[in-house]
Length: 453
Image 1 (tube, one colour):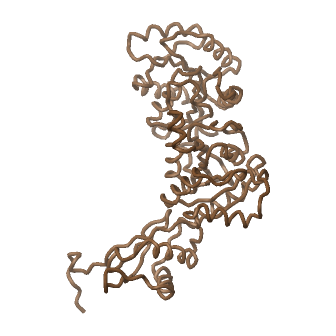
Image 2 (cartoon, helix red, strand yellow):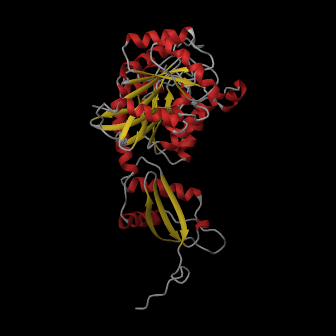
Image 3 (cartoon, rainbow, N blue to C red):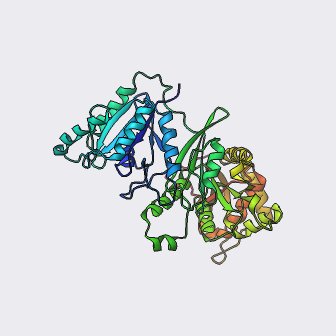
């Protein structure tokens, strides 16, 4: 049996996302006073000793969504309910029972679920007696908490563990073998790609730009291994975000950038039906700046008008995104799951490359070849740059330390040339390479006693 599942259910703006964050002890869901911020199922794992459960945040039940996604949101809620071993039915203690609360209570009774009532926004003890009214909903006494002020949260967490103790669990959730972040501009097909990988409608897909508002971690089991796929909010130009003054969109953008930093492999999604734009270039620059292993995925290839041969389009992308010359390019149709498995296989290969350790002997042989091909340009008058030896110091990204006479003599152009040749000479052809330089010091400079022979 897998881990128990606890789903947070409630009408809009009762503090469900705040409760998930409080129970997890970290900011996972976007929290905004605007109703309807959460649309998809957002989940995390909560642990105590060797016991764990999966906690799922859902959209507000009964929301009248401005983008006509209410049915999709309720579909995600129902999926959460059907998978749950325990439901946290969240209400607002300050507002009392509302018609929507009554509708939710009826829905939970229909599914015959184990329900724990939580009266949120009980910021002071004087509000606790008001929770007595919720007994009328048929789920016993509602426990008072304030997610915003962290009041009674630790007690609620303990009560959840007690409620689940009769269930057999498999211990801690397995660590994902690889984290994949899918990033791109709005409406490029990121959520369709996540669903194609998962084989189910894990996240909401709509033609309406901006449907996904948060970074959503989706754990997927493939061939007995756990992958973590991060679906991110679509990115727009910063100038456009500033004009709309949309804080939800801003937080989604920040989460997308954070997802790139978390990822082992980044899938940069390009919409084949549109020219490469400033957002694509900005994201590519960020991926390169973070030295992230990346696959450039051209999605909606079936819809591209007057599309050229794939080789011509690859040349076009190399010209438009020069910082990602090392990144392989794949063509997909996410809505039909076309070529998705091959991209997953490619990701595994790139992840292996990015975690390759090269022996010092092989590495220095490669540098000997490079030195014979192109001399390091001299600077600072008569002083000539010299590389004494090289060693690898890190993986993912692959990082080499060059011990030299003067790091200032090695310009960026020469480093790019060296990185390119190393990809050709070593088994790291399609991943970023970081080259560091430091002066070689003598034993006396390091404070060591000289050795006598």
